[in-house]
Image 1 (tube, rainbow, N blue to C red):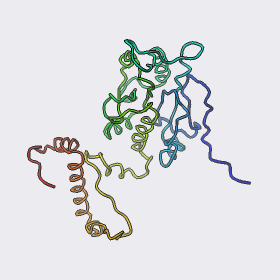
Image 2: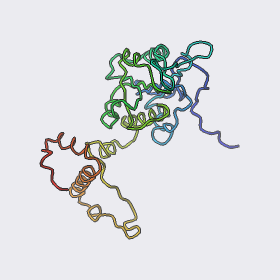
Image 3: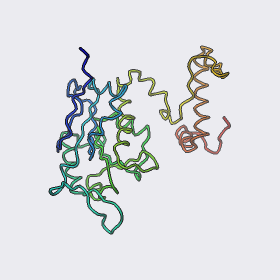
Image 4: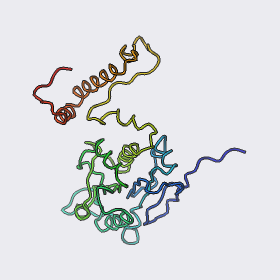
Length: 276
C-alpha cells in the first residue's frame, strides 16, 4: 500500500463570491497574516507559494491565502466582468460595479486602517515595489491584491476605494496573478518564523539599501577560482568589513539609483563620492 499524495484540501474551482481558503483551515494561527486575492483565475493559486519554506509556513498556519473569484460578480447570463473602453480603443476594461462588489466582499472582517491592511491593484503604472514596501506589509494584518486583466480596471473604482497601485517593474504581464505571487512571497518571507533564521533577511539585498555581497561555499578552489582569502580567515570583523565594501561596490556599479539613495540616507555628500 502506497502513501497517498500530500493534499492541502484545495477547494474545487466552482464559482464563489466569498473568500476561499486554498489551504485546509487547520492549524491557522490566530491573527496570522492573510493575503486575499481578487482574480479571474483562482486556480492560479497558491502556485509557487505552495513550495519550499513559504508552502511549509502556509501548512503550519503562519500565514493564510484566500481567493475571491471575480467572475461570480459579473453581470447577466454570461457573468460579464468587462466592457469596451470609454472613448474607444483596443481591448476591454474591468467594470467598476463588478470590481466594487468584489472589493466589498474582500473587506469583510478586515481592519479599516489601510496601514494594517493595504488594498493594492497590480499595475505597471504603480509605485515600484521594493523591499521596504514588503517589510511594511509584513508588519500589518494582511493584504488584498486585485489582479487586473485585459486593458486594466476602471479608474473610478480605484479612486473610490483608495486602492494603492503597485508595479513589479517596467514591463507588462497578461495579468496580475504572477506579480501577486511575487509580491506575496517577498512579504511572507519577512514574517517571523517563516524562514526560521530571521538574521538571513537582515543581511540580504536591499535590507540596508544595498545589493548583497557575493556569496561562496565549498570547495575552496573550483575551476581554478579560489574563495577570497578574507572569508577563510575566521576574523569576523574583517569579514564584515569586506562584505560591506563589496555590497557598496556592487551597488554603485550596478544600481546608481540605489547608491545615491543609500548615500543620502546615511548623510553622505553625493558630490564627495569616493572610489570603491
